[in-house]
Structures are given as C-alpha cells and as structure tokens.
Image (cartoon, rainbow, N blue to C red; front, side):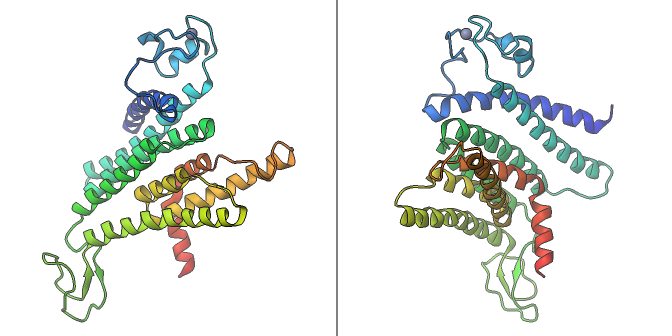
Length: 311
Ligand SMILES: [Zn+2]
C-alpha cells in the first residue's frame, strides 16, 4: 500500500461523511427547512433513521435501497451524492499528497496559498455537486449555497493575498522609473508599481465576481427584452459569480462555455425525441455546476493553453 493511497482513502472516507451531510442539505434547503433539526427520517413512514442504517453507501447497499421500516424505495441519488463527494475529496487528498511529498523530499517549498487552493477546491466541489442535484430536482439554487459560496471564495482569495511573498504578483508599469504609485508599505524597490500583489489579487477578484454576474445578467435582460418573459433565474447569475469567486475569470468563462455546450446538446436531443418544445426550460444551473466541476479539474490547463494560443 503506497502512501498516496492512504491519503486518497482518508480523503474518500471524509468525502463520504460530507456527502451524507450534503444529502441532508439537498433534501431540505430548497424547501427552506432546517438542516439541523429534526433528525434524518424516512420520507415515506417518518421513522427516524438508526445510526447503523446511516452509514454512507454501505447502508444503502445492505438495505438494498429500501427503508428498514416501510420498505419504501430510497433513491439512488443518496448513494450517488456520497460517492461523488468521496471521489472529489480523494482528488483533493491526492493534490495534498503531491504538495506534502514535495515538501518532505525538499523538491520545493509549497506556499500557504497552494494549501488554501486545495481547501477551496474541496469546498467548491461540495457546493457544486449539491447545487447540480438541487437544480435538477427542484429548479432551485438556494442562496445558502450560492451567496455563501461567493463569500467563502472571496475570503479564501483574501487569505491567499495575505500570504503572498513580498513583491509577488505586483503590477509594474514601467521598470525604468523609481516612481511609486502604490499604497505605502509596498515592497517596490524599482519600477513604477501600480498595484501590489495583494491589492491586484483582491481587487481583481472583486472585478471578476462582478463581471461574471454581469455577463449572465446581460443575457437575462436581453432574453427578457426579446421574449417578454424570464429565461434565466437569478440563481444562475449567483452560481456563475460563485465559480468566479473560487476559480477566477477565465475558468468561470470556461465553465459557462461548457455548460451552454452541454445544455444545447441535451436540448437538441430532447427536441429530436419530441420530449421538449421550444419553450421548455432546461436546468441551466445543473449544467453550470457541472461546467464548474469540469473547469475546476481541467480549467487552469485549458485557460493556459488558450492564452498561449492568443499570443
Ligand atoms: Zn420508511
């Protein structure tokens, strides 16, 4: 058994627990119920679920997807959500292993920002998996996830800004002059520092969140002006802003692009099978959330590739 496997297994088990909690959120948040009280119970007969019947995935398998008391079917959604969060956390654990290995073998010194990145990656996955399922089942994207997510993503950006090394990320306009335009206390020794790294990171992220929201707001207004009805909820706007808060602008655009592409394909398939008409509603939020997961996994590489292409 290799050490990386131990990391991934622990991550997976922790993910199962969080997935179990996420199931409670998915069942209760869209209906504005408390996620603390009452205890988990069967949706059919109302019996409280015994602790040994509440073990992630395992109980679902052992009970053969049925309630112990009334034998009502338990949706596969519960096991799927637990599994998804488990796999997501295992990926996070692997990222953590790579950092720790580099540290122990003294190949490189991982920065605090890199650890914060993994932490944010885990939270983002948890929120996106939850939003994906909630929008699909209830056409709702609760503020408890989207707005809270924007707050957490922005807060983590501030933490990263705090841990930037002196001079790292500075925006320098003219390297030949000694004039300093930046705030006092910046580490500009040479050149015309327009913004220090932390200023650029935090202000840039605010601009990023606002522009991501504005893009979808513009689409929303445009649709309303043309068709005289709402085509997109504000939840979708907040969801894209949340993805931008965690990942940045390029990654948010990638998530939007992937979502629109996937939703279009899905819509065309539905139209072709005559299961939908031109005025049917697609759960865009689910596609956005899935696009966000895709972007979190492969976004940095794709955005970098695209930037190189543009140069
Ligand atoms: Zn029951």
